[in-house]
Image 1 (cartoon, rainbow, N blue to C red):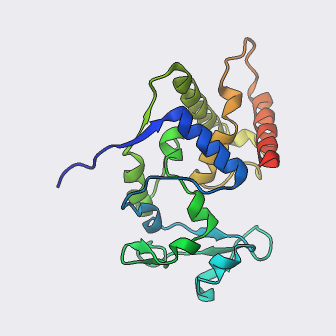
Image 2: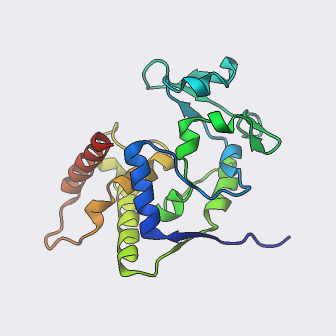
Length: 214
Protein backbone atom coordinates (compact mmCIF):
# COMPACT_ATOMS: atom_id res chain seq x y z
CA UNK A 1 0.00 0.00 0.00
CA UNK A 2 1.41 3.39 -1.01
CA UNK A 3 1.99 6.14 1.54
CA UNK A 4 -0.69 8.87 1.64
CA UNK A 5 0.35 11.90 -0.38
CA UNK A 6 0.75 15.35 1.16
CA UNK A 7 -2.05 17.81 0.47
CA UNK A 8 -1.01 21.32 -0.46
CA UNK A 9 -3.00 23.90 1.50
CA UNK A 10 -1.59 26.94 -0.26
CA UNK A 11 -0.37 30.15 1.33
CA UNK A 12 -1.02 30.32 5.04
CA UNK A 13 -1.98 34.02 4.95
CA UNK A 14 -4.63 33.40 2.29
CA UNK A 15 -6.05 30.48 4.23
CA UNK A 16 -6.09 32.49 7.46
CA UNK A 17 -7.86 35.45 5.82
CA UNK A 18 -10.49 33.15 4.28
CA UNK A 19 -11.01 31.36 7.58
CA UNK A 20 -11.45 34.58 9.56
CA UNK A 21 -13.93 35.86 6.97
CA UNK A 22 -15.92 32.63 7.16
CA UNK A 23 -15.96 32.77 10.97
CA UNK A 24 -17.10 36.39 11.03
CA UNK A 25 -19.89 35.75 8.54
CA UNK A 26 -20.86 32.29 9.79
CA UNK A 27 -20.23 31.18 6.22
CA UNK A 28 -19.37 27.97 4.43
CA UNK A 29 -15.68 27.14 4.06
CA UNK A 30 -14.10 25.96 0.83
CA UNK A 31 -12.16 22.84 1.74
CA UNK A 32 -10.65 20.73 -1.07
CA UNK A 33 -11.83 17.48 0.47
CA UNK A 34 -11.66 15.44 -2.72
CA UNK A 35 -12.91 11.96 -1.91
CA UNK A 36 -12.09 12.26 1.79
CA UNK A 37 -14.97 11.78 4.22
CA UNK A 38 -12.91 11.18 7.37
CA UNK A 39 -14.83 13.78 9.40
CA UNK A 40 -18.06 11.90 8.57
CA UNK A 41 -16.55 8.71 10.03
CA UNK A 42 -14.89 10.05 13.19
CA UNK A 43 -17.63 9.85 15.83
CA UNK A 44 -18.58 13.52 15.73
CA UNK A 45 -21.76 14.88 17.28
CA UNK A 46 -23.22 17.38 14.80
CA UNK A 47 -24.82 20.52 16.23
CA UNK A 48 -27.87 21.75 14.35
CA UNK A 49 -29.45 25.09 15.26
CA UNK A 50 -33.18 25.57 15.65
CA UNK A 51 -33.39 27.83 12.59
CA UNK A 52 -31.86 25.23 10.23
CA UNK A 53 -35.33 24.15 9.18
CA UNK A 54 -34.32 22.87 5.77
CA UNK A 55 -31.66 20.63 7.27
CA UNK A 56 -33.96 19.40 10.05
CA UNK A 57 -36.63 18.46 7.54
CA UNK A 58 -34.18 16.00 5.92
CA UNK A 59 -33.09 14.22 9.10
CA UNK A 60 -35.34 11.71 10.91
CA UNK A 61 -36.38 12.94 14.35
CA UNK A 62 -35.17 9.75 16.02
CA UNK A 63 -31.57 10.65 15.09
CA UNK A 64 -31.72 13.95 16.99
CA UNK A 65 -31.58 14.84 20.68
CA UNK A 66 -31.41 18.11 22.65
CA UNK A 67 -27.99 19.78 22.74
CA UNK A 68 -26.86 20.03 26.39
CA UNK A 69 -26.34 23.56 27.66
CA UNK A 70 -27.83 25.25 24.59
CA UNK A 71 -31.23 26.97 24.17
CA UNK A 72 -34.27 24.86 23.41
CA UNK A 73 -34.45 23.83 19.77
CA UNK A 74 -30.74 23.25 19.39
CA UNK A 75 -30.11 19.57 18.73
CA UNK A 76 -27.30 17.12 18.12
CA UNK A 77 -27.11 14.30 15.61
CA UNK A 78 -25.04 11.37 16.78
CA UNK A 79 -23.27 8.56 14.95
CA UNK A 80 -23.68 4.82 14.46
CA UNK A 81 -21.77 1.97 16.09
CA UNK A 82 -18.94 2.42 13.58
CA UNK A 83 -18.60 6.14 14.30
CA UNK A 84 -20.22 7.06 10.98
CA UNK A 85 -22.68 9.89 10.49
CA UNK A 86 -26.11 8.27 9.90
CA UNK A 87 -26.52 10.47 6.82
CA UNK A 88 -23.43 8.92 5.21
CA UNK A 89 -24.60 6.47 2.55
CA UNK A 90 -22.31 4.56 0.16
CA UNK A 91 -19.39 6.78 1.13
CA UNK A 92 -21.16 10.08 0.45
CA UNK A 93 -23.45 12.50 2.29
CA UNK A 94 -27.05 11.63 1.43
CA UNK A 95 -28.25 15.15 2.32
CA UNK A 96 -25.26 17.10 0.97
CA UNK A 97 -27.28 20.00 -0.44
CA UNK A 98 -29.15 20.22 2.87
CA UNK A 99 -26.29 19.40 5.27
CA UNK A 100 -25.97 21.22 8.63
CA UNK A 101 -24.07 24.50 8.97
CA UNK A 102 -21.65 22.67 11.25
CA UNK A 103 -20.63 20.46 8.33
CA UNK A 104 -20.47 23.37 5.90
CA UNK A 105 -18.07 25.30 8.12
CA UNK A 106 -15.87 22.40 9.28
CA UNK A 107 -12.26 22.67 8.12
CA UNK A 108 -9.79 20.13 9.50
CA UNK A 109 -6.90 22.38 8.42
CA UNK A 110 -7.44 24.30 11.67
CA UNK A 111 -5.53 21.52 13.43
CA UNK A 112 -2.23 21.70 11.53
CA UNK A 113 -2.58 25.49 11.60
CA UNK A 114 -2.86 25.66 15.40
CA UNK A 115 -0.94 22.54 16.40
CA UNK A 116 -3.88 21.37 18.51
CA UNK A 117 -4.01 17.59 18.54
CA UNK A 118 -6.96 15.29 17.97
CA UNK A 119 -6.80 12.21 20.16
CA UNK A 120 -8.76 9.02 20.66
CA UNK A 121 -9.19 5.80 18.72
CA UNK A 122 -12.43 7.14 17.23
CA UNK A 123 -10.54 10.07 15.68
CA UNK A 124 -7.80 8.10 13.90
CA UNK A 125 -9.17 8.76 10.41
CA UNK A 126 -9.44 12.52 10.80
CA UNK A 127 -6.08 12.62 12.58
CA UNK A 128 -4.43 10.88 9.62
CA UNK A 129 -6.01 13.32 7.20
CA UNK A 130 -4.88 16.31 9.25
CA UNK A 131 -1.25 15.18 9.03
CA UNK A 132 -1.38 15.33 5.23
CA UNK A 133 -2.08 19.08 4.98
CA UNK A 134 1.00 21.18 4.24
CA UNK A 135 0.92 24.98 4.40
CA UNK A 136 3.11 27.24 2.28
CA UNK A 137 5.14 29.39 4.67
CA UNK A 138 7.49 31.06 2.21
CA UNK A 139 6.89 34.68 3.21
CA UNK A 140 8.01 36.35 6.45
CA UNK A 141 4.49 37.59 7.17
CA UNK A 142 3.07 34.08 6.80
CA UNK A 143 5.64 32.69 9.22
CA UNK A 144 4.79 35.46 11.68
CA UNK A 145 1.05 34.78 11.44
CA UNK A 146 1.54 31.03 11.75
CA UNK A 147 3.65 31.48 14.88
CA UNK A 148 1.00 33.76 16.36
CA UNK A 149 -1.75 31.20 15.78
CA UNK A 150 0.42 28.49 17.35
CA UNK A 151 1.24 30.74 20.33
CA UNK A 152 -2.45 31.46 20.86
CA UNK A 153 -3.30 27.76 20.76
CA UNK A 154 -0.45 26.92 23.15
CA UNK A 155 -1.58 29.59 25.61
CA UNK A 156 -5.19 28.38 25.57
CA UNK A 157 -4.04 24.79 26.07
CA UNK A 158 -1.34 25.22 28.71
CA UNK A 159 -2.94 28.08 30.66
CA UNK A 160 -6.45 26.65 30.65
CA UNK A 161 -6.64 26.62 34.45
CA UNK A 162 -6.29 30.41 34.53
CA UNK A 163 -9.52 30.91 32.58
CA UNK A 164 -13.00 30.96 34.15
CA UNK A 165 -14.60 27.54 33.82
CA UNK A 166 -17.19 28.67 31.28
CA UNK A 167 -14.84 30.49 28.87
CA UNK A 168 -12.79 27.87 27.06
CA UNK A 169 -14.58 25.49 24.67
CA UNK A 170 -14.63 21.82 25.51
CA UNK A 171 -13.64 20.36 22.14
CA UNK A 172 -10.35 20.54 20.16
CA UNK A 173 -12.26 21.94 17.17
CA UNK A 174 -13.72 24.88 19.09
CA UNK A 175 -10.44 25.49 20.91
CA UNK A 176 -8.59 25.71 17.59
CA UNK A 177 -11.21 28.14 16.28
CA UNK A 178 -10.83 30.31 19.37
CA UNK A 179 -7.05 30.39 18.90
CA UNK A 180 -7.52 31.64 15.35
CA UNK A 181 -9.97 34.32 16.51
CA UNK A 182 -7.55 35.77 19.09
CA UNK A 183 -4.22 35.20 17.32
CA UNK A 184 -3.75 38.96 16.75
CA UNK A 185 -2.81 39.28 20.43
CA UNK A 186 0.23 37.09 19.82
CA UNK A 187 1.50 38.75 16.63
CA UNK A 188 3.85 41.22 18.27
CA UNK A 189 6.29 40.67 21.09
CA UNK A 190 5.62 43.47 23.53
CA UNK A 191 8.55 45.37 25.06
CA UNK A 192 7.03 44.71 28.47
CA UNK A 193 5.51 41.23 28.49
CA UNK A 194 1.95 41.04 29.77
CA UNK A 195 1.55 38.72 32.75
CA UNK A 196 -0.58 35.61 32.31
CA UNK A 197 -3.63 37.02 34.10
CA UNK A 198 -3.52 40.14 31.94
CA UNK A 199 -3.25 38.04 28.81
CA UNK A 200 -6.19 35.90 29.92
CA UNK A 201 -8.33 39.04 30.22
CA UNK A 202 -7.11 40.24 26.82
CA UNK A 203 -7.96 36.90 25.20
CA UNK A 204 -11.48 36.93 26.65
CA UNK A 205 -12.05 40.49 25.45
CA UNK A 206 -10.65 39.75 21.97
CA UNK A 207 -12.87 36.69 21.58
CA UNK A 208 -15.95 38.64 22.69
CA UNK A 209 -15.16 41.46 20.25
CA UNK A 210 -14.66 39.01 17.41
CA UNK A 211 -17.95 37.24 18.10
CA UNK A 212 -19.77 40.56 18.42
CA UNK A 213 -18.50 41.67 15.02
CA UNK A 214 -19.37 38.36 13.45
